[in-house]
Image 1 (tube, rainbow, N blue to C red):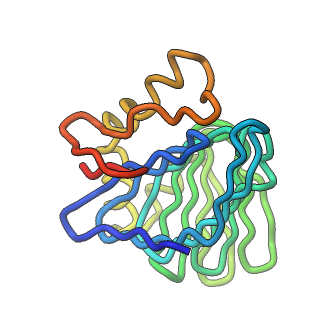
Image 2: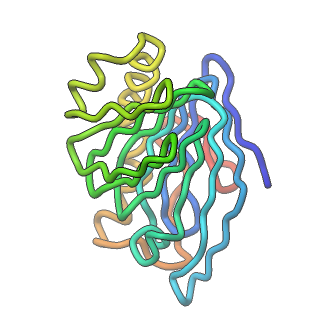
Length: 193
């Protein structure tokens, strides 16, 4: 599949055809392993492999209608999202997942947990540490905290990308809406900021 990467002083907000939003931090690399979307049926399949960096994910129609069909791989972890909004950060070995809305499943070192809104988990050294989002954030290495902070700085661009869907109360099938965040330039299914 295609690979998306950002440089040291860049970020990107991508909007997929089903309405899923992906905001990626600087020095990020992701492979789109599988993505199919049937707009009339509002069904599909998503498998994204996160090589390094941080991302915020907001579920689109596939995640709302078929949550088991949305998965992310990060380092040695597999993350499933369940009609959710949250962040995933990896350094290629360790992974932190924070959930803002809904729930994520997190499989690491043979253990699977469900992370509800307001909670987080950090997979490192073959173990999962769980806690509130703030507890986990406070315990993270500085590089992870910096990447999460970078994602928080993308909030305005994310909001602009989701505004049409939020106003309508749903993500209309086959109508991804504007892909250009404020101050951005257009281009394909993703816009650079």
